[in-house]
Length: 621
Image (cartoon, rainbow, N blue to C red; front, top):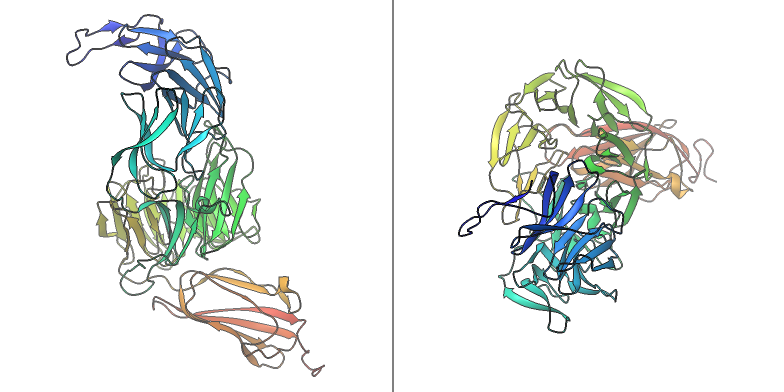
């Protein structure tokens, strides 16, 4: 039975609620000084019921069944005149004094929260549009925009008005605004309280190859890019080096840095994020957004197959993206790999525990601690490593020659493994769920528990070098590990970005993926492209080609500091613009690591050049 318990000066200390029988469950969905909107299950009855509980009389009045599908509601709001109950894109408005009086209001966007003010439904649609709060009249006439931006929730005041920290009319000035209904029922928006200028509002960050992106919310929703140092003391540019803003011409700009499903930097100059369709009660369609991290950069999307209860980015590396998905609340998580260059999901079905690095997808093989690498370009297993754990990894991360794994769902057996030294390094903590509280960098791990703890592994022992006590709690989106030879970036309480490094030697420079055609036709633009993805930034690089017949070596191209990938199109000419003869060549890519650690890179391969000016042994045409 449901009871009301008096407190403070309330003379009634324990009053049974009338108007409702025995309950199997109940939840208070919304309340004010007069009463509460309650969702409950009746003992022996099926389905959910809803009622308005009046505090003064301790009575419950059952509300009519929803005319938009029954069951539970996605959002509710208790107002002085009306009770708003929303399911998907429709709201049922029930009179608070007479529940038999009902109105139905169509909503064009699925709201995050609703409030009933006078004869208006106030709907907060989050940050999915230029206007985030819209007012819908219950008489069905045209809706009107109310607030441009909203920080936090709309709060219903004792006067029946809704209050929110917000901006209006395109202004960047923040204040507490009151949304109220006037004497004639007209909607009014007024500034109720001025607030001091707010600090920068950053919602999520991602970093790779020293390039950092952050989702900003001020007068608009935007993504700003910053550049961090890749050698010497950690530093970051004070001003952004690129930006994009949500606008009518670029409506999806912020989705690549969205909090939904997480965000990641690919390490080759792109960032990725996710979004769900606007009007949806999960499971629903999920879209991956890929954006070039530069001003005016292109924006592409890939639709994940089917409808999903949950989707989240696990890791990104170059052209590949590892995603965790759940099809419904009762299903076990699964994974998929996307080729974001090709814009498709690969046929490979990853295990729930999988690690992505370059073109290699690492997965458990058996239950004795062995992991195997599948080359995503061919689908073949090309390498195996014994992690020395004697268990099947429950969680697995890969970063060059470093691995991180646990043995069980409770995080037991957390350890790192270094392939060149074959050292298994036990970590001094239990990696509690949810997964993602520990992230692997190049020779270090970061644990998120009561702050950020950074354990340096490069000496063969876990040495805690840093403890970050103050940061903004945001489901792991307020800190990011640069997997590509880089550092930890995090936000503090003032939402200032900090970059933290670790001591010791970083891993050597390597090519972690490449797309080099075996035959290159200088006359066909589509076949001239070649790309090498690198494990960390380089200060300079040079591509040379040696004619296998004549032995003559040609400098094809060269460049300075490069972060992420060497990407070029060979038009059959050398760096000086001279035509190179058609022939079979051995190419050599030389690169110098920007951090000064490790030997220079030397990678080789073969290519046959056609469509150039003349062929070897035949003279000039």
